[in-house]
Image (cartoon, rainbow, N blue to C red; front, side):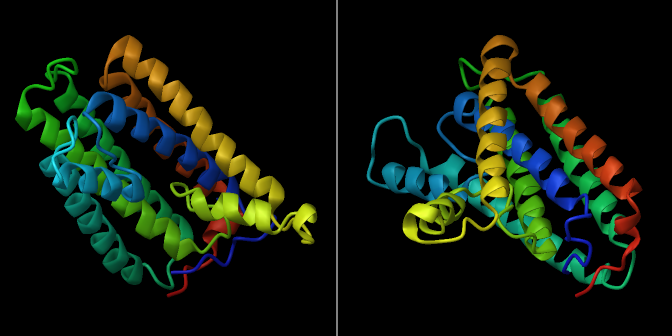
Length: 234
């Protein structure tokens, strides 16, 4: 699914920046609250899995595997669902995806009410939160990928930072999308900082609730924009 409304008048870039903030929140939740595992950043998760595979203290195989499998499952389902929305107004796909993602975050928040971050117990709660948030972020990534908005993946910054430097005037480039790229970096930084404060002060419930609320509210506002009535294309 591509986004015909991804022009300068489209609300999509603003929505994706807001979703980038929630990525920082989810990374704070998973790394600080679930014990050295990523549920949004699969590059970091592969690295952690490599550490765990050779017995590095503090890293475990099962949480990383659970995050990877749930992420891939979410991405697979989003890829399939995206094709069913082809030709329908883009707002239908956006709202459906947001409702699904928000539901997963809020179910994870309900599970987190009985989870002890310090003791990382119970184990069933730990893996439930990993799977729910990993699934949500895989679903998100596949959805955003189909929208094809340049330099706004909402989760990955390596290529964004590479482009920012390689395409800069210092490198002889024309600084394409420089503001968008910098905004993407700032959004994830902001989300991570806020998420860290929330996790350290209140645990996992509040940041999970906030992440879901931001996804739902931001998407609802985006869906009100006239550009969101354009049909999604396969």
